[in-house]
Length: 173
Image (cartoon, rainbow, N blue to C red; front, side):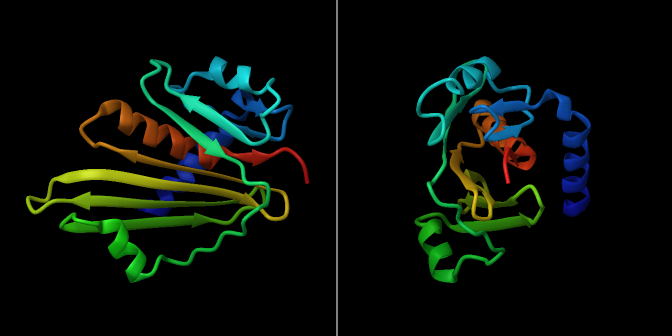
């Protein structure tokens, strides 16, 4: 089910490729989710620091996330975190649910790790997603977003980030 959902998302992204945003004169492009402030992104594309970071925000301006572009391209793999790492992330929460998916593609590798913390009543305390995009020996992009599940803007930002990362393409070989 999960793989068919991802396939449908990728097909829908390719079908709307004419709506791509070309950031920093084409270093990379993506299909912007409808909830993001596109003009804010385009203005940053003209600035001198456009190769090191990009801040995206919702149209209502309530939430913003900075995407980091390390100078080197980190090679991604589908390895799961160790139990020790998961225990540290769990912290004082009663339960941690970990989900991850990895897409290897000629346009770049995408990995999304999801950490859902629950309390004793099985109520979700927080959702954190770590987003990675890497094009071997060319570029990598990274973002982390931790959301309060009761905040609609937080959940919209999580969805928008996932859509953005799934549609990323590098502009040169």
